[in-house]
Amino acid sequence: PVNMLALEELTSVEERYHFMSDQRQDLTKGIVVLEETIDRINSEARRRFRETFDIVNLNFQELFRMMFDGGEARITLEGSDPLIADIRIWAALRGKKLQSLSMLSGGEKALTAISLLFGIYKVRPSPFCILDEVDAPLDDTNIARFNQLVSKFSENTQFMIVTHNKRTMEAADSLIGVTLKDDGTSQLVTVKLEKAGRDD
Image 1 (cartoon, one colour):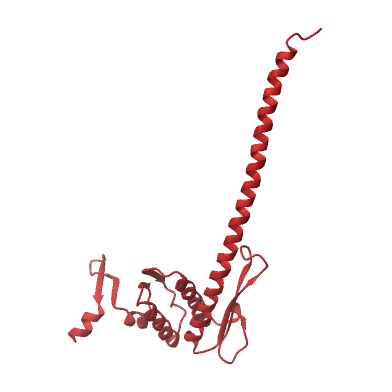
Image 2: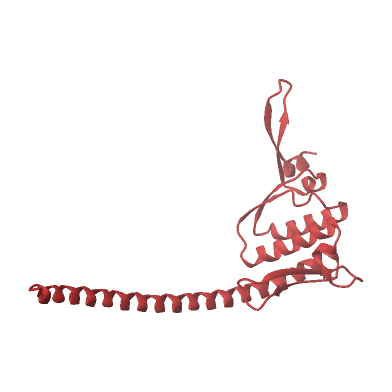
């Protein structure tokens, strides 16, 4: 039997076909634009990351030499694409060969990490910074170096340091602590060390 509505159905199907073809072309163009945008973003991200990485590397080297009275340190990228490459930390104390961070002692690792942390912080400093127990693995000599570094950065940044180290507390301008009262409740104690020094 002949379908008498075939011409009307053909018109409807052709309209639908043209609509879907237009949609497909729009999607194809959108994919191309999106891929180009992603490429531009990745290219810009690689450029900025590389610039920042190089600045952080220079800062790290400078601060490491200051913290260890010499020596050599650097960070390197392991891989061709900086966006997915691993970062390796290398350090050598004065008179020693350059080695991976994992080969250093606990205190040396901590001081190296602090040098890198402040090297990153130096790129984009903020007016306020909280450090939590970063001085815990340091001995008295390295605590003095750490306090010297914090003092240097304190000119533009206010530091709040959570610590149990007496030498770090001595270097602070004020102390805030919690003590246990006789009735077993906690009490907040604040001491301004500058005022205490002037009263003596």
